Length: 221
Image (cartoon, rainbow, N blue to C red):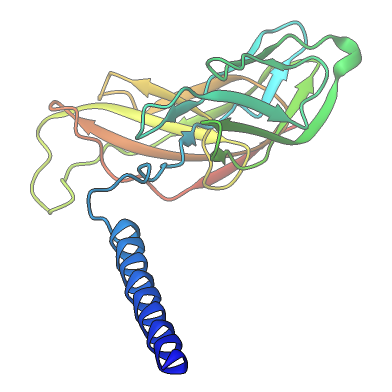
């Protein structure tokens, strides 16, 4: 009889343990799969954009401020790597500023501006800055005024031209707008020695800008 009682007790104890284990398993599963969403929301990385100028004359102020956004409205911090000693960055707004001197004449490459929300970050492509002694070069532009819209209809409200130019193909760090549609020549002045890549767009009275023209290049010795 004792053996039977002991055997019965063991079965009951085992059954109880199995029941408790099942309850624990179910409760754990409910917590893990709780659609109530106690987990923190996903963090989106910030984004940064902008095209820094590629040259500066000695004694002139170099300045560039990127545009950064964050979908979560997190506080953003800016930093720079590979910068020359005459450049510094404002960690609060990303403004990169500095005034090079005669001793700083030369080319500075591998500069990277980044933004971080404290967890994730984004960076601009590496860029270079040339410090030159003079910037008295020029390029004379000439063109034929467009007469048609892109859909083939007559262009009757031409209002302005915009020229984009820079020292890297397809990357235009500078632009100039000409608000006189009757003009067909223009001189880009104060250019540092470099090869410049130039593209143009036409603008109508509604402010709509055409696609860019084919890119042209000219060298300023």
